[in-house]
Image (tube, rainbow, N blue to C red; front, side, top):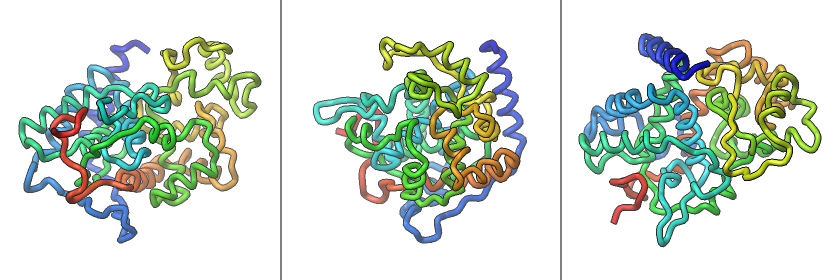
Length: 335
């Protein structure tokens, strides 16, 4: 597929999305604490056009790089795993901070320029009002929508961290080799049900993976749950003795329709075509396999459950009220 064809496909999906008025309702978490301090319409008085400004800035950039949608969804996931959804991942290294991006777990994080562009537009309209953490959340939401996924109303009101640690990222961001047990525990800690845990992994339907994330499935022996043609593709692209793993720019589609947010991920993993180890594991584990099958046959159901899970992830351990700050520049703490 040529880059021009890819751009046209994504444009078509976005235009279809604009004409689709269906929004998926979300669980506001009833009092379990996960939405504390967040609410719909948080900026209604202070920056009423925030979502329009974010969407316009995002849209003007996405057509230059249709693969950015997957990158921005991943950015939100990795930010939320370290402490909470507080934009700590955006902070550059300084005297007191070692950037989370230094961590090997954040290999491949990119398109931070989209966040900078959105922040500049918001600062011009509503200076010092909208947090970088909320921008990450909105950019991820719009990435899902523009790729053909559900329209998800999200809670806002996050504030930005004043610290970051590459060591915290090393400890907190899960590896592709994570077990089903640990995956369930991880997302249960964010208030997710078992169905929501499987659904949130469905975000793998968009974007790309790298050799460094799949070598354990190929060598020294091949994972028997990784079947052709996926296994042959990965062996052809990923050498058995990788040179500089962190400089390895070889990448491949997460699933066979990786520019679209759909339920293809679940169909693929049922057929032994999952890219990451955890993908194969949830298709085989007796606790999750039935859910995988349901999502594979019912995309609307997957979208509905994913929407709830997405908001729970974005609302976990956030800074609100007087905690943290609203950074003027997402890369540095206010002076």
